[in-house]
Length: 79
Image (cartoon, rainbow, N blue to C red; front, side):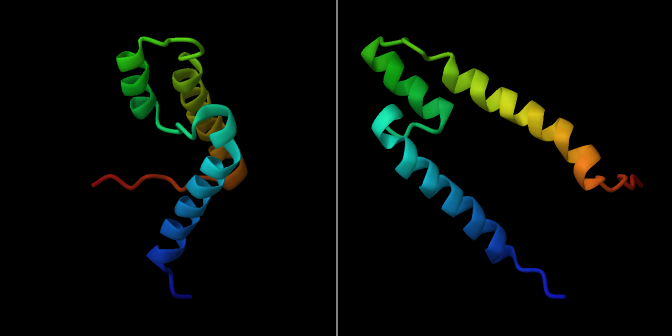
């Protein structure tokens, strides 16, 4: 079976596009915490800023906890 790097990039790109299209009305499509931080810093508007930091961190933790049991991560070969 041929593995393609294009499908991974296409999947990530489509997820970002769908996230932007679905959230732009509510968040201004600010999916990147660093991007939102710059805008908040300039405008001095920190209302609900914590969501842009806690959300991705909690998502990363949840994904790492789910990955191991569901997908049986391969053992790392060191050396």
